[in-house]
Amino acid sequence: MTSMPIWFSQLTWRAPPIPVTHFVANLVKRDVIPLGAGIYIFSTNDQPLSAGNVLYVGKADGARQTLQRRLDVYFRRFARPGGKPSRHAGLELLNKMYREAPNALYVRWAGCVVAREIEGELIWIFDPVCNSKDEHRSGYDEDTLIPAEYLY
Image 1: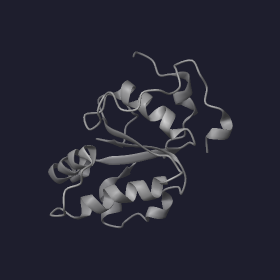
Image 2: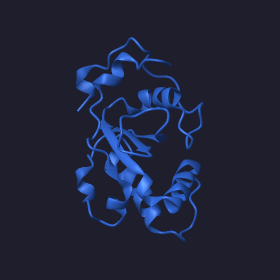
Image 3: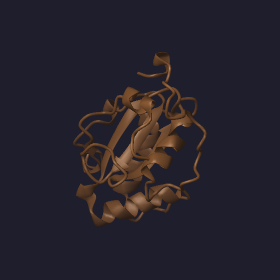
Image 4: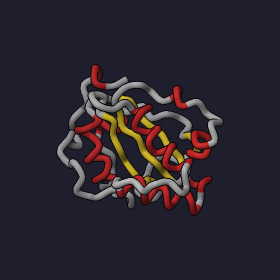
């Protein structure tokens, strides 16, 4: 895909992205992360999102998990190098990358109620190495706007 879908510009990403090491070392309080639904992205740097720097796209649907609770799972795993491996393959790949280069992992998020619908589209767009390409693709098409009441 050469251009981003129209709905992508509606997402308000946490800026600037925060180095994961800041959460693991408790330099940044986790309460900066919203207690709502949304999308989160782990990337290799704090630059604009691109297929070259996005490592993982995930969602918190808000019904069962908030962004804060979902991301806390990752930060706790990164903080325990010898901990029991997770069954979540993407988390374990990110954990391996964190071990190899802790300063090269950043996180950002965008609050939206329709996280489930756009997660798969973002995976399709960025093709992150820690996601499966066929994950959950059934969301908004390129020319569809997300209703404003679904964003925050």
